Image (cartoon, rainbow, N blue to C red; front, top):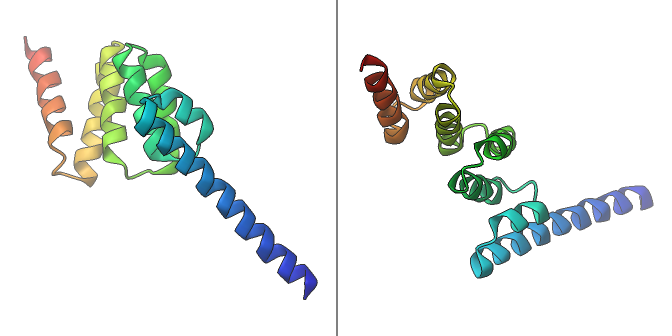
Length: 129
């Protein structure tokens, strides 16, 4: 009985620590806008990691954003906006075929994703010029 109680207590403590990390990360983003720092504090929160990737993309650091977006996708595989941004990064880094494959994959699973559709049309338009 003591072992079960100790195990339950351990699970509760771990859940609280994770929640505190996420809360602290969201607080940092909302008060300072520093998504990079928040991403280090809450490395398992896909929303904070996504914000971090956007900051990296705006800083023209798609190499970093690709790594961060892959972390987001590992945590939340159906977060289509992360996949869409991954395609944008690959297109920006000169890998249009890879970007196109990502957008096609998104549209196969979620045909209503407007941004992926627009990005796919744009890359096809650029290739036809």
